[in-house]
Amino acid sequence: MVSTDMPDFSFEQDAPTPVAGIDEAGRGPWAGPVVAAAVILDPANFPAGLNDSKKLSARKRESLFEELQNCAQIGVGMASVEEIDSLNILQATFLAMQRAVDDLPVKPAYLLIDGNQKPPINLPLKTVTKGDGRSFSIAAASIIAKNHRDSLMRELAQTYPDYGWEKNAGYGTAQHRDALNLVGVTPHHRRSFAPIRKILTQDSSINS
Image (tube, rainbow, N blue to C red; front, side, top):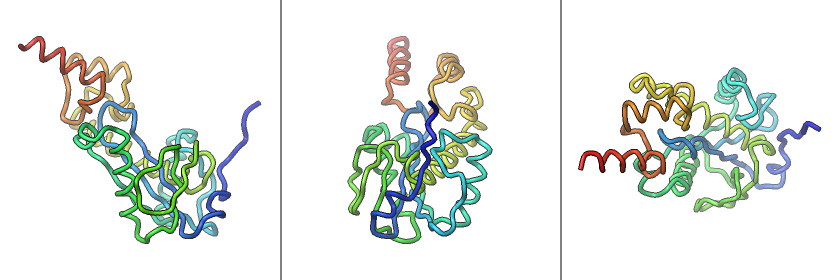
């Protein structure tokens, strides 16, 4: 049976206001920053169709992204490849989330965070497993974060066209792997990630 579960405001209703939903995009890719978004929705004025960004078509995500600009309070934060490599991806994600909260035009009273790991943010918060499919605020954050990161990767793809980042957003697809073997590692690759580290180690051994 196909699940018909959809996000709602259940988690928001139990929390002090304003509530910000937080989600990230880009923990798994081999290249590019990790991006987090924090979104405060107005329950009386928000776009229909909010859901986990992974469950939406690119066209629907883009449409909701544009609608959210006009009716929600939004903060976006990033952690760079250098920060990912120096801190590790989890701590860099937490840093991006803190920056997203700091970027909000108002200070939230409570945070709803996708996942099961609590970032060290000095505000009351709740983690929600699979929250992007359960909370409207987290779903909105997932859309903002993914669209923002996808746009960044499309821009990078113009300078580094071999890797297919405009399509794979830095994930380890066959095209991306082939380009790494043929063209090599760019400054935007995460050197702490095993596939990139392996290539750099091989190159080092060949050149030594």
